[in-house]
Image (tube, rainbow, N blue to C red):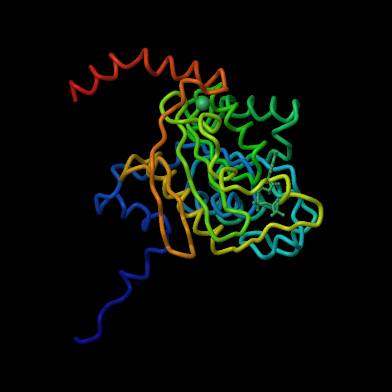
Amino acid sequence: SKIKDMSAEVVDNNPYSRLMALQRMGVVENYERIRDYSVAIVGIGGVGSVAAEMLTRCGIGRLLLYDYDTVELANMNRLFFRPEQVGMTKTDAAVQTLSGINPDVVLESYSLNITTVKGFETFLASLKAQSSHERSTGVDLVLSCVDNYEARMVVNQACNELGQTWMESGVSEDAVSGHIQLLVPGETACFACAPPLVVASGVDERTLKREGVCAASLPTTMGVVAGLLVQNALKYLLNFGQVSPYLGYNSLKDYFPAMEMRPNPQCSNPACVQRQKEYMDSKPARDAAAKTK
Ligand code: ATP
Ligand code: ZN
C-alpha cells in the first residue's frame, strides 16, 4: 500500500533517546554518564539561569545554584525567569522552573553572597560536600556566571584552593560581546594571573556600576554566551571534541577570537602558585602516562 505506517516514528516520546542518539552516531562515547556529574553555577542571572536550564534539559545529575539576588521585573528582558516569580530568590525560582522541566536532576539552592566571609565558607563547603547522588566527592565543574570582578576573584580563590577546574563567562557592559574561558588550576592562567580581559577593555567597572548607571542587556548575547559555555562544559564532561581554553564572541562582527593563556609564575594568588608547582612536579608522571597510551 502507499500509506506509510507512522506508528513506529511517533511512539518514541522519550527526550533522552534523542540525546542517546549522540552515542549511536559516534559523537560521544557514553552519553549516559551525564547523570553522574555535578555542576555548580555561580550567578543565576542572564547567563547562569540559561546555562542551568540547558544542563537540566541535557539530564545532568546534580546542579548547585548560587545567587544573592531576587527576581525583578527588570530581569524580563532576559530569558528564563517569569513575571510571577518576581520577589522570589533567583535560586528558588530557578529550582521551581528546573524541577518542573526535569524532576530527575538533584537541585541545590544557595541564596548567598560568595564574597562575604560566611557566604564563602558555605560556598567552599558545598563544593567539597559528598552528595548521596554520585560516587565521587564534590562537583565536577564550576561555571562562573557572575557580572563583577570581585565575585570572579572569589570563585578563582575557591577553585585554586580546591584544585577545581572551572569555566568563567562574561558579557560586556554594552551587551554586544562576551567570552568563555577554561581555568584549570596550575595548568592554565587563573583569573588573577593575567589582567582580566573584561576590565582590560578600558572601562572602569566601578564607574559603570554607579547608582543610576545601567549596563546594557541583550537576551541574544547572553543566550549565545550561555550556549558556548554549556557546549564547552558538555565537551569537557563527556570527553568529546575540543574543549576551548578561551573563546570570545563579538556580535557586531560575528568574530570569535580564540586563544590560550599559560599561568603566570608571579601570580599574586598563592594557591595558584602552589597549584603551578604541583603541576610542574607531576610532569614526569604525565609524560610517562602519555607514552604508554
Ligand atoms: P544587572 O547587574 O545588569 O542589573 P544582574 O545583576 O541580573 O543584572 P546578570 O549578569 O544577569 O546580572 O547576572 C549576574 C548574576 O550574578 C546576578 O544574578 C547576581 O545576583 C549574581 N551575583 C553577582 N555577584 C554575586 C555574589 N557575590 N554572590 C552571589 N551572586 C552574585
Ligand atoms: Zn594565577
